[in-house]
Length: 436
Image 1 (cartoon, rainbow, N blue to C red):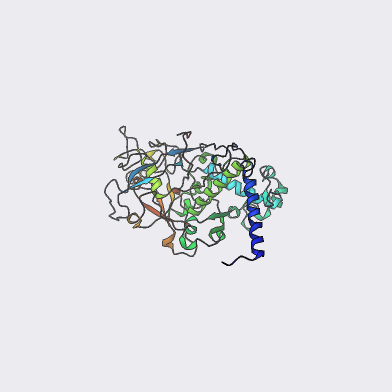
Image 2: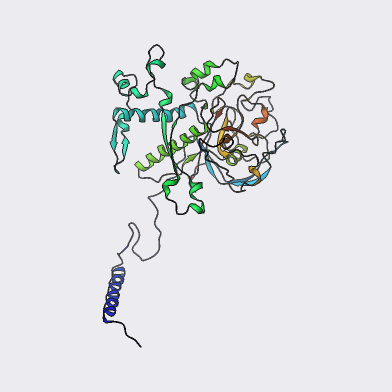
């Protein structure tokens, strides 16, 4: 039998000696590798990712419990389009805005974007702990836009002299631009992208986010709607009315900002950050709109648009065009009428609502029965067909058919309308302490 060289024997002995010392360190005193906050008893206890979790109740939102329902027409498909076939699906629980996002709520977003841009122009920035430049909000929140010296410093945001009325210096809405950064989970999850660097799936772009107020005039030819274009977003009388003139991309940017705004606060308090706010999927929207009434055509049940007293149940276009009969000529307050059984207002009428779903005629034929979701992140160069997003609920200018919870419609993601708004959802983890 051949023997190992002396040099090899020496190396093996050194290796054994090192392993023996390591074992001694691991077993001596029981302190090596001990996690902070765990009892020193040698048992498996688990390590939480952060401190004690406090599940917040998002202001203005209601909890939609998990459940199963029949998605699709609850009545005859009068168009015979066959774009929505009845199928049973199951939906996980989530939180949803009780009302459509209002002008006041969206204005908080546009004001934040305005102030952040102005703060950079005025030098109100500081270095964060990680060396990244950040806004100094103690100064940015006190910017006086009526001050002459301030207007000179933020001249890049002011309308150019040839675009001023009576020489008045005003902030150019086109300059209120939000910088968006998001992660494409759907693309990153594909098997063929397993070894692709993360940066390949980070989507960055700049987007003007001020609502298109001129849509009130553009949407209706030979119709006088200038007062709404001038006042709807800017006048305090309409503060609690649903925001309109917002594209699908702007609504998505609002969700991104709301997530960043919340998590920035939670991080400053050393608390756990939350999952992102987002637009609801088409299936989530319909499930929430039904309010537990699986086969009813309207959020309040049905099959009629009036209650027993003859009162109309939503804001739409009654009869052949009696717009004011339901109490509102255009939109009404976001919390008008009666909520459905989940506590959601105006899931039918008032304004149609963006969803995250791609509008595809045959989508019901192949989508999953568990949290159905069909998405397509369309690029600017994609054909218009790929930019169609599902809108739901009907609006103040629609006839009763579009108020049915199963009626599908669409609009292009880069288009703004005076009758389309949105509401957001968030996937908070389940908890026994949750307030419903």
